[in-house]
Length: 223
Image (cartoon, rainbow, N blue to C red; front, side, top):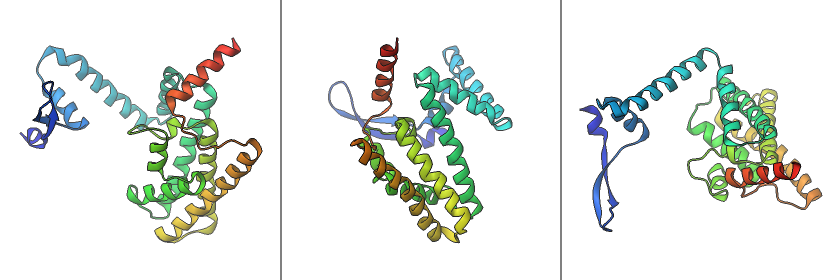
């Protein structure tokens, strides 16, 4: 079948320490495989997939639902309400920026990623990839692993980039790269000023696990 043709093989280590060719698949292929399994044991997972698909369609009809679900999920994960408010605001600001880029005729994917890297490098001194490595992340979302201060400065950088773009009216990708640098520099100035007052580095290796641990300890102190 078409699906079986897409499944590849990689050498993986087994319990005996030897490496054997093993069937491998990406997430989409695994989901499709599960859907094709006739066993009753696969039914709960199939129902879950159908529910997720239904929720996604609902969100397309009413985007506010996605915000409500995001809020619910963040609360379940143990994030503080203050952090969640900042994170949801950052999503709104990011959307405004990407809409501005689209209006400038820029392409999603590589161009958006390059501009984002320029902004992040300008204020944080690291590209998105370098930032994730610094925090010990792999596939996790970088912004979900930022502290409140990091989120705020990233929002300032992206909001500034959007505002400068609307004012400067850049033509094409190259001019938009200059605007991205300028927007990131606005947040860099704020970062340097804050660090000079606190004596502490803003860009932190803290990730979700360590941040949540801090939040929980703070909650115990409040009690």
